Length: 169
Image 1 (tube, helix red, strand yellow):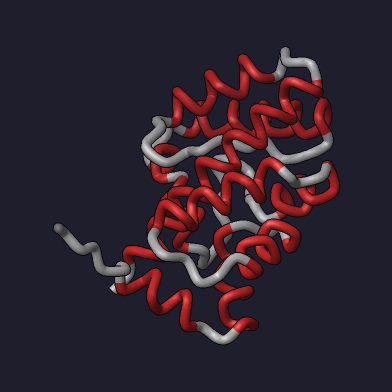
Image 2: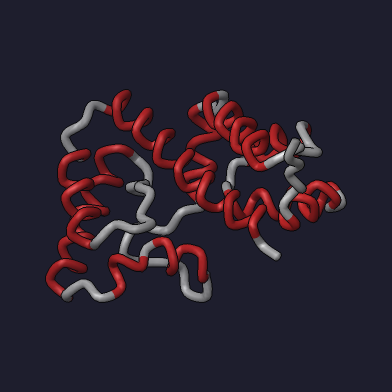
């Protein structure tokens, strides 16, 4: 029989005082409803239980909750100064030519005008061209379809960030 130990990062998260855990979760996702749901289910036996709770909380977010979560994300191509998380996640834009950066700015603005929120995509591992192509494609989506895509992308981002949280030593 094999025994799996709780990863150090998850054990530390489980042991955090509630306010500190809440703050850590808000660094993963800016939705207070999402963070509250994850806090309420602590402690987590393993990372999969945490990820499942995140997925369930994501599915339960209202439109207002999604808007709050999206407000925590900077536009693609413009990570927040001093924010290593957004810079790391948007690394694919770092070496993009000026012409592509300008095009992304225009596309971001067109997207925001059409849908009323920032273009959200799980940028980790994507090239600047892939992100540009995605925003071009998604600009044609009806709002209902786009909301579901945003929910899915946000879930992917949360999973990556939670993985980092539970794997930290």
